[in-house]
Amino acid sequence: MAKGDEVHATVRRIDATMLTLVKIMKKFGVPKGMGTSLNKMRGSVGDLVAKLEMTQRRN
Image (cartoon, rainbow, N blue to C red; front, side):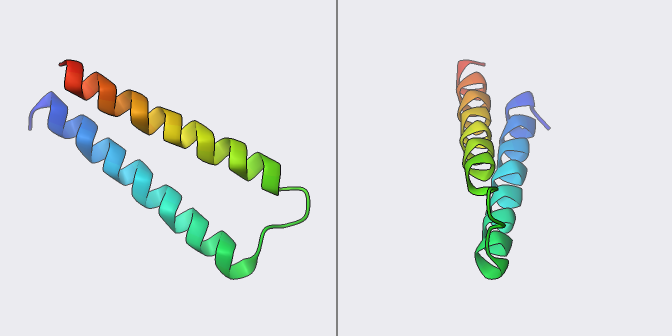
């Protein structure tokens, strides 16, 4: 497996995990006071995914 393939697999795994978390949170609701923290985490995950994809493209 090439290095780019490993990065792509990691990005897909992170995306899938975040999607699962969002679905669970929609199903059960967000506990009061947790919305801001979850939005920050979602933003951080998005930044990480973007950075990994940019790194893959450079290599």
